[in-house]
Length: 416
Image 1 (cartoon, helix red, strand yellow):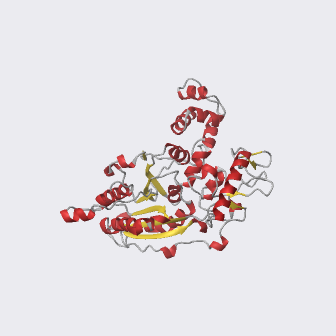
Image 2 (cartoon, rainbow, N blue to C red; image 1 turned 60 degrees about the vertical axis):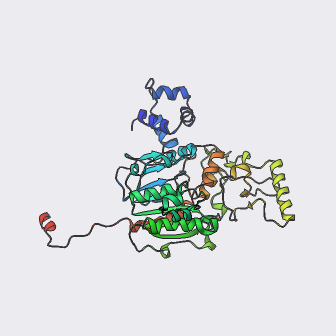
Image 3 (cartoon, one colour; image 1 turned 120 degrees about the vertical axis):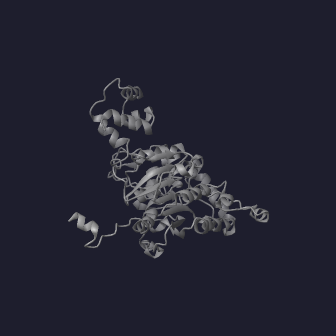
């Protein structure tokens, strides 16, 4: 791409003000470049690639398999499958801030479709794909009325049992497109929601009504990072392939990483242009340290509940610790994961970069949104290494080698 094309592409992802800030110029200058009124200096092309656009180049081939990314968030599930050779052909995400982060990190190749609201997309308009991926939100299922429909002789398939929930959108696309496989991710509590009826409905729809061979397992992200985070993973295959959870490689919990692997090193070894650290040694900025007022409030709150015999309170960790689950509400007070800074200084929140590391994203992952938005996004994300581990045992069942023609066949003779 030439410089003008790179400017146009960056403006598809960011506002003129955001592009200007990244490049160290005035927004009016960016608008003039976009209008072809002035010519940018030669270094601008490299600056755009380094500061604004996803790393690497857009996909030029079909990939080993095609997948779609529903309720995509910031792309944690996509990250795992793309690294194993898959090509994303369709993405759905409604939150504009998540979309901004997603587009800052992924190349959408030719033919890729981006939809904001999957409920308004007809299933026939979704591109053909091999794998459906979805970290779908779990809304309460209403199965009231099924008995009445039975009495009236009315059908009550998945469209009736799950209409009004976002799982219905997953089910209707699977029903129409019949992908070779799917991976669904949700909170552990999905299994016990409504005394197990919600989960039973989901499995019934996937297995008995849509006809897939379904496997599910709760996996703790603690195997791969210093965070206790249990999530249910549901895998399904259209054909009866020899998939087994026994092939899943989970590192031993005793050797799992500690918090020091995600915290800023604060010794000058990290890039000093990070918005979260400063000074010659890259110390975490003071704005992440709790104020006296907030720290006193959290301590008083914890003490009050401790006196009542409750376990509510903040979670204080050190570099050798494992932390609680990062939630989307972390931006409010950071109480579930506070980093100790010694007895003479109030603890601090994680920075957004540390949250990204906690969820398994590498340091090339761009964070183009405010701290508040970033905390929400990482709190809602998947632990990428967990999805990668599952993807590694799924993909061999997706990539099928073309059968080798035996010697002496007409086809081989015609090539000789």
